[in-house]
Amino acid sequence: MFESLELAPADPILGLNEAYQQDTNPQKINLSVGVFTDESGVTPILATVKQAEARLVDQERTKSYLPIAGSPRYDSLVQELLLGAGHAAVTEQRLATIQTPGGTGTLRVAADFIKRNYPQAAIWCSKPTWANHPKIFAAAGVPVHEYAYLDSDARYLDFDAMTESLRKIPAGHVVLLHSCCHNPSGIDPTPEQWQVLATLLCERGVLPLLDFAYQGFGDGLEPDAVAVRTIVDHVDEFLVASSFSKNFGLYRERVGALSAVAANNSTAQKVLSNLKVCVRTNYSNPPAHGAAIVETILGDAELRTAWEQEVAAMRERINQM
Ligand code: PLP
Image 1 (spheres, rainbow, N blue to C red):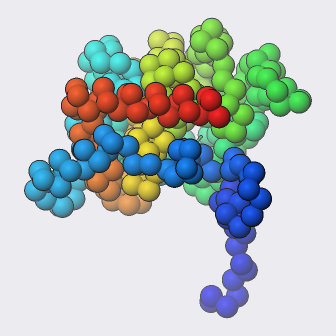
Image 2: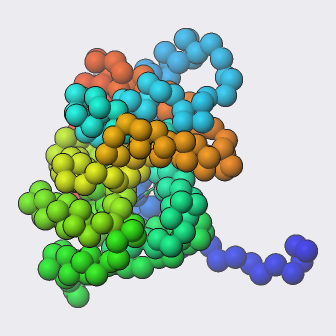
Image 3: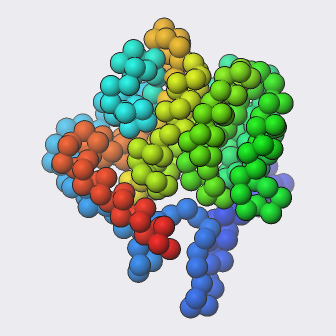
């Protein structure tokens, strides 16, 4: 059976990265994979991550399975990072959050959830979008379409074209939005434009899915949450896919979270039960180590302050570059 296989194409982004490694031009700049490097070209381990790991080595008592939804403490810290501590949606327990393996794994769980529960729904991605978006949803059997985003020269956000094409999306479909640091353009809606988008998405009766892979890399941890925090004021139901690959530098540890915001707690519980089915039939329960690092840092006032400073330093270097 293997003999008859065709060689599958290499991933275009990772393939470009390999070509970069082989290029001897001393002035080369790597703009392919979204990985932070310092001035010597190294992707450093954050000092707060090292400190958290030291604590974990000392304190961890078991390697038994985590629950399907991951660590409850981690899940609630993620909710606070998204919406801010004490937000009504959090205190009213209208959020269901599960710990997931990286942003990609998060999106795949979201795709399986959509396919399983809304088989008629397509997902609509910005044109352009991260190259892996359409592939993840297509692999799960969710049809993929595009909505307008940039002008024809790809220099600015064509907001009129964007809203016009979003208005044509049928109710019950899913709209994928980049919460901040739009990949690949880096061009995001303004806070005022997010207000308009939130109202429009609510009117259209579509399910927003916010891909949040770069919180803290745009304008800051709080300002970058503007999309999530605006949409939560207007839309009763939406999904957020968080990745901590970038802002904790935990790329290879695979740390993410999928959050569903619902109108009330009983609906959130129904969503959660269905997300658990998707996880159980995929990877069963999430890997622990990376999320335990995030939980340790976010749950400790001192480490958290130090981490915020590390995120700010990465953000400033990116802006400088
Ligand atoms: N979403 C976007 C927009 C990304 O750019 C990336 C990674 O580059 C991801 C999701 C996935 O990140 P992860 O490495 O956590 O799977």
